[in-house]
Image (tube, rainbow, N blue to C red; front, side, top):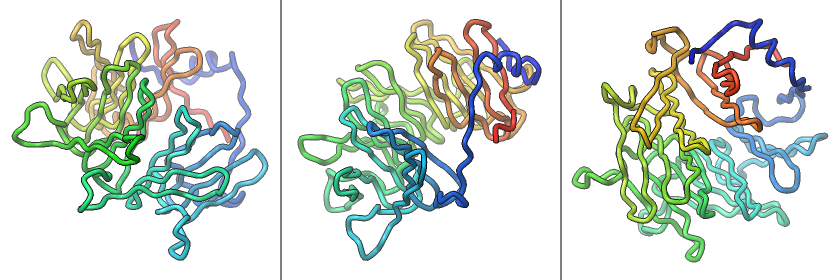
Length: 306
């Protein structure tokens, strides 16, 4: 399996489906042009999180939601890092410095959850990097200072952090990504601590760190578990790692043949699945890649869609 940057091959495969893109910028009402997160809610609205504000798009117009220091019901911070619509149709908004927000659709207001030193049932940090709902319907919040589990009955949070004297604690507090297709565990990516497998019943963390026959970079940006149990891991300098837990087997794929140290293009920032089972991989400087399972090959998509 190799990465291919052949435009003609990518174009040939891509012709099987045609898409029409609408380009939205601040000229169209978007609050800011750097988009960090996008999600569609149960009502059909597209929510767009930017470096300066949350936006709601209905297909015709854009409504802005900005922090107002004189309005306690406004969003807590304008830099949006993560968005999630959970199984109860609730919109959660993770911010940079303002903690977590829960949107009230009827009132169009926000309930805030922030760190409080005097309350152990609050967030670990107000810097939210990622949000995930597991197979059991539990909300997990990845912050720069640890992992939080939302406890619905108490409307509060349990915290999990690195502890130097506990070998089965979280390997590093800077969490970048959370994913799982199994109700028994979570895969947790960290910046500097490699990958963690969090066993939900025992609340113990299994560490996967840089090793000659294992993970090739401890700075992990993204993690995705497929329905088959295969774990896709995007790293900062080691490109794409693929882990087969049942076999304890690792595979590595870079953007240059036999070279996983080629710089910025080997930073894999995001991994998601497509509707047909393909894997889409977003890189930093290397473009967008698509793994087609039928052909068992990667294709790079670098067409100008706008």
